[in-house]
Image (cartoon, rainbow, N blue to C red; front, side, top):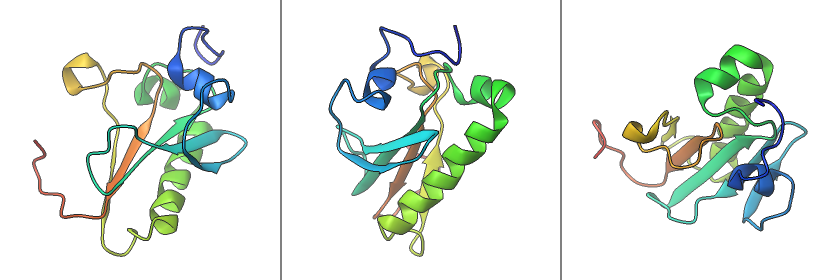
Length: 119
């Protein structure tokens, strides 16, 4: 069920402290940790503690938690000192877009030039 922790979800386990991660920030509603396969010098994932499969589902069910997630993405950028040089916040939705863990999450990328379009 959306919103409830899922026993087979890696990010639910990280949020619960059951799986180790390099956590850089935590709030009552979010957890931010370094990506294990960074695509930029700064690559941090910000996840909600509640389980929703993607950002759109999270927005529809719990818009305040999505707002908290975006606020934390900005805080991560400031902590990592990429807020003034530029950073990107990315939500991948669906396997065709590169989503591999089906728990809503934002990628915060920075620390190098980020050309558009990516790829």
